Image (cartoon, rainbow, N blue to C red; front, top):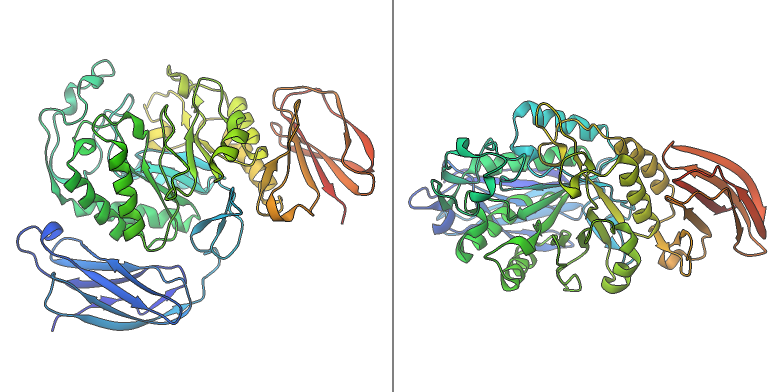
Length: 508
């Protein structure tokens, strides 16, 4: 009888793993199946396992409750049926479970702790050198970012012509030495010279993805996994439906048991020349069937929005729709979609030639505050030219911009905001006003943000009975000045500078 190695004790929302030997003949990725059924007092779930190379099969499971569990693992991968038991302990400090939608427009961890998303984008940070990956994780650890968008597949685009450290499939790539910043767009889709078997996964590539997701989890960062994208020269964006579905199921089996996973079906889905809405809907149905933990799900646009009212979409993952407008549109999107609005691309702080990658740190910070005060959640990226050719937006490494330090300050303000978050005040025609959202309307808490406007004073009148504490926040210089307590109509003097906000809180 062969041996099954498995985790005997795991914390709530941790990852149980069982390892078993099995069939090697033929193509283990397509020829054999493996499933595990897990039973506890409060839940029963069946999940797919996966082949992990060298005759080894694995099944992973995330328990949502404490107590004793049993498992049964079987399938055509082996003649044996594996059974066992394990114990689930309380969640340790810092483990709050997966992030869920909360009060329609906001998010919270499964244990109820509010989650205020401050995201960043590093498309293929995990496919760079080991030294650069380490630097990226060190930068993230010293930042306010609690979500990062990144791809499973390598990226082919301007500033992204180098080869990744590994490929998702067995095979060989084209000779990339011919690529330049002038001709790279001639080598798109499945360029001549690539020879990959899209039915045989490179397990070392996916083992590395697993490891990166876990390292992000240890930092308290959500892994917003971009499953597909159109910036491709290896043919990964043009696989058959059969190969696409195989990939989706394999990836879900590997990483869905990690609590910090989000699913982004695609980056810029509308740029795929050979995918239709039917394909995206099919992938969504696979996630809904195979991801038994119901992680957050969305799909990201270039120009044309996907229909974010689709029931499988949990939140809007939005890119700005023209050169200027981004956070300013949040009120409209909240009304239209009635879901959390996550502005994953509101342009990038940097100085490259492309219009999406050369806004200032002040403008990035303004867009963050504007989004937050309108009840949405902003995302950052950085594209500064440098001698090494390492741009955070794709490669990670170090941050060079002025906005990330301001996000630490904003994070403090967010964490002081009563749950679940903010909503835009109506009829605020010459300022951005926010109050507490949904069921907590009895809490009198307001932020008024003036962005590029420069008032020297503002008058307020919320009601005649409540006593309010008032503070002036300089969002760029990162200061908070207490102005005192007021009742009825009152006037607050301001410095006549851009990027100021006023916070008004009921005195309890």
